[in-house]
Length: 202
Image (cartoon, rainbow, N blue to C red; front, side, top):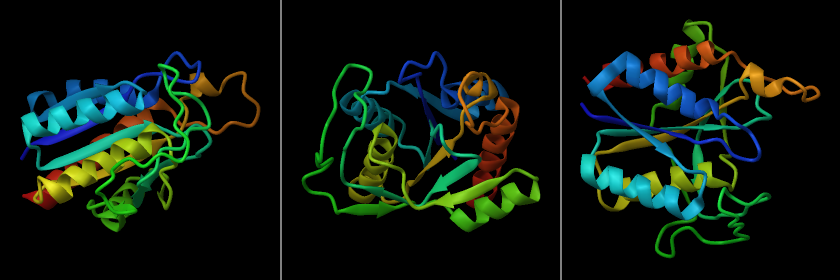
């Protein structure tokens, strides 16, 4: 089984992005059993690179991680919507407002990952996690929608989904009342998720 795992570079004046650190650690743990892709926080380029990788690798599962700084725990996204609407510009200054991601796609796609199974597995391993019903309208949502659109239109056997992680402790320092999670805990969660998905697919 082939799994593509993506994370992001830093954005919004941060110097680090936990999702990028997570996929770096996963590469060391799983080696060639995983395909790792670090995406830019750019609407257009992130979507292009994701599509190129999926077309080349044809993975069985595409699992994406991204940072959601105000969240307190691991959040597994249920749905991606067909709109880019950015409160802040992306890393090259592009700031779409009410922009459709795909002119031929539906208003939304639901994840094809086993939400409840993942949630239960994380809970059994004493990792706090929740299901989220909004991936936002920034680059994270764009990537999730793009992966599910490709699954729907070109790769019907590919499962896809998105997981948001909080700030790392280092990022929360100096910010008032900002929740965070230790990077080691986030990496552990990601490893558990991947092993669960591998087991379900076997």
